[in-house]
Length: 214
Ligand code: AMP
Image (cartoon, rainbow, N blue to C red; front, side, top):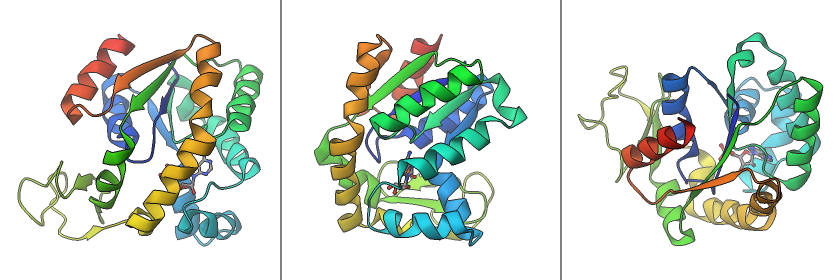
C-alpha cells in the first residue's frame, strides 16, 4: 500500500505517518526529514535547500523530485510508503505520477488532514523533539510523561526546528495555501482524495486513518 498524507504544516502528518508506519509496516518518506539530513551532512543539496527552508519557502521542484526518485529505488520502499510532505506542488504531483508509472507502482490513498489556519501557528511553534531518538512532542498537546525526559528513550535533551518560529511558520502556511492546496483539486479530479478532520485528538485521527485504510 502506498499512501500520500496531505495537509498544512503542523496538521499532524509526521505524527500520524510514524504511527501508520508501525501499524501497517510502511516506510515514511518525509522530504522535510530528508532535507534536514542533507543539511546536517553539509551536502551540496543541503546547502541549496537551506536558504529556502529558513525562509519558509518551498525548495525547487527539481531538487525534491530527484531526492524522492532516488529514495523510491531503495529496496525497503517495495512494501509500501507514506509520502509525508510530498508532493507539495502540482508539478511535483505530476512528476510523482510519472515516476510511479515507470516503477510499476500506484498510489492507493491520498488523505488530507484538514486543520483550520488559526490553529496552525500554535501547533508549529509548540513542537519539539528528543535530540537523541527524534521522538516528537508538543508544549500543549503532547508533553512527555515526565517533564524533561523522553518517553521513548529516556533522553534529556530536546531540540526545536529553526523554521518552527512564528514568523517562518506563517510563511510556510502561506506557501501551503498558495502552492500546495491546489493539489487537493488535482487528486479530487482523479477521484482519489479522502479528507479527515485534523482538529480531532491525535488518537482519534489515528483511529480514523486506520478505518479509512482498512
Ligand atoms: P516539513 O518538514 O515537511 O515541514 O518541511 C520543511 C521544509 O522543507 C519546508 O518548509 C520546505 O522548505 C522544505 N520542503 C519539504 N518538502 C518539500 C517539498 N515536497 N517541496 C518543496 N519544499 C519542501
